[in-house]
Length: 316
Image (cartoon, rainbow, N blue to C red; front, side, top):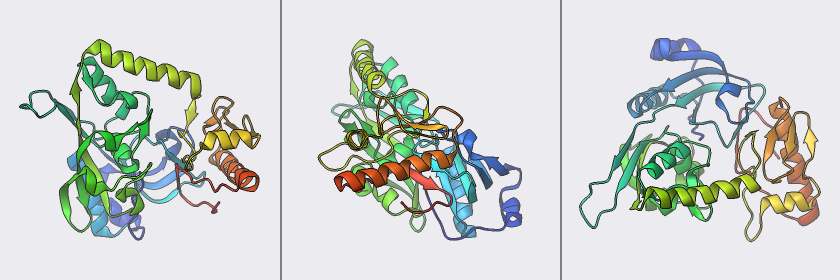
């Protein structure tokens, strides 16, 4: 999840603001699902929504640039790293409410750094339905809200009640689903980066049984194993164009299995680029450029990235 302010504050000012919480030259390959990426100038780890709010408020007050990362999925960090600040969101408290008065459904409230797939599995153990589709979706709750994550015909918009938002100009607020202006793999937060961050979210659930919820999750897991590759990747690389699938287009362009350095366009699903041989970020980006250019030349389709490029990159 990306959030940009304006400029980078000198390290001495950041040290004064954050003290021992500030980490310098932290290697981003250790914090991304693709296991690639160079060092960031400075990083702050937030262990709660309150710590996240305080860190973001301090950075906005300093008028400094920052990126906010949860699980590190759906981002590709340059080998040269990031000039600026990264906030690593580890706020993971979860509260499940099954005692709402009728006709109110059960709900779950989760801080934005909570692991989305782990949350889905927690709910399954309690026989609560609504997030089964997320059981194998990499990412955090905040990142899922930011990008309207989804799978198997469902997405965040399907069950989100509200998100607790920290807005740069308006402070802390609760936003109903409609205010987030969700679109396919997008939201107002993603379209207007730097203006707000997700602190927590509440989702509507339905009461089922542990066996029924687990059966649905098992079905989705089977579909995933049969269609998506294991190993280190960023998730889906390109958004599906209207009426078609990015993976189908990349495969039809003859690129399935193509390798650059330590990265490969998956032989199982062509919209997944896998780091299977100690790839560099430049290897993955080379495949991105190749797929984008070839699909455009052969089919006239301008594929749009679903992942975000962090650091300095040439344009596609």
